[in-house]
Image 1 (cartoon, helix red, strand yellow):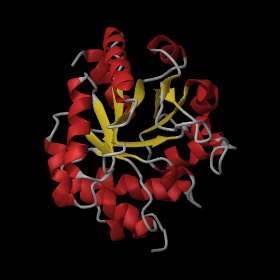
Image 2 (image 1 turned 180 degrees about the horizontal axis):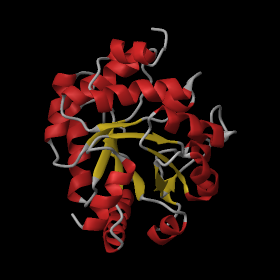
Image 3 (image 1 turned 180 degrees about the vertical axis):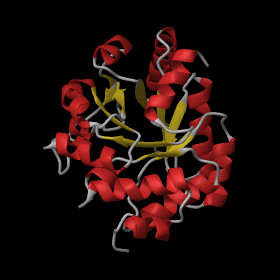
Image 4 (image 1 turned 90 degrees about the vertical axis):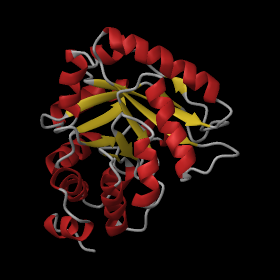
Length: 262
């Protein structure tokens, strides 16, 4: 790992742990709740304790003045929910464009097991080569998604995260398998830090229990989007997640410290 990558990883995390709030959903879903006034949402989640935020490059000008010193990750592929196939993520930017946008890192999404896996593998492989030339970290979002793939299957998730490392990623985001015991296999499948996605759990306490389970299994944090930015109080839920990730609190204690109702 080069000094540049090491330095920039420190900008998007804290002591090797990460609370990333992706807000690239405007491309996928449109200006949904939490993203119309993205400036206020970014201010809230970073005041709450998010280490970094993530958007498509075109939103960068709305990010920097509102992120309270947090890091910035530019996402470089995407698709829409109203297109023919949401799994067909296409390239939306370059390393150079991300750097011009002030990014501390870049990210790229792969749907492992999907029809588009081959093209996305090629895309991530090229991206890690290009990013390494500039000392820019790459967050690979490697999901187990396909006609014969269960998104929470620990074997499939373990394969997905290993794929990210094999292609040169520095951080890897994937789905949560549902419990700490099975997620240990996922974390043990790679030497890269593993972050969990938000998913669709039933309420704040269950979300925080998932985070706690992932950390207990050896995870390095979260990359949680709608769970945080669409919350009624984005600042408080970000604070609760950060308390679990960075201060090793349990789910209920974090909920109480963040002054959220169970």
